[in-house]
Image (cartoon, rainbow, N blue to C red; front, side):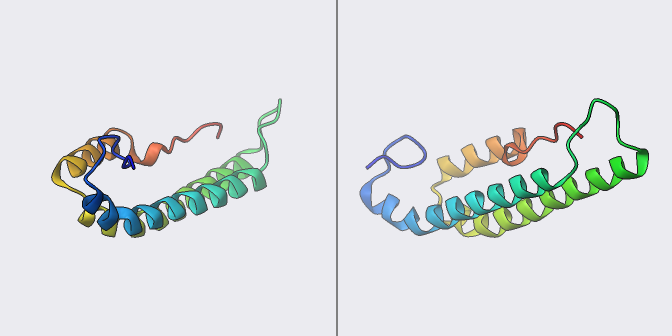
Length: 108
């Protein structure tokens, strides 16, 4: 079995991490679904710009959804990070430091 780090952790190491990885993956999937729902519920960008108050409300709704998603993922990352081997922690530090959770703000 190949572990998420792509380096084929020893079976014992992977088994110790399986629970935290599963919880983290579930949190990411759930947060992503909720974020998609929130984005779908906000007014789409039209050919004509929205009035300023509606633009601000759209931004607030999107930022709130991002904050909630980040909090849900952060709650799952703590136990995962504790279970990671040191090389995996360094990789996690690099990936999250470069672009937190891959979340980008587009289209608002």
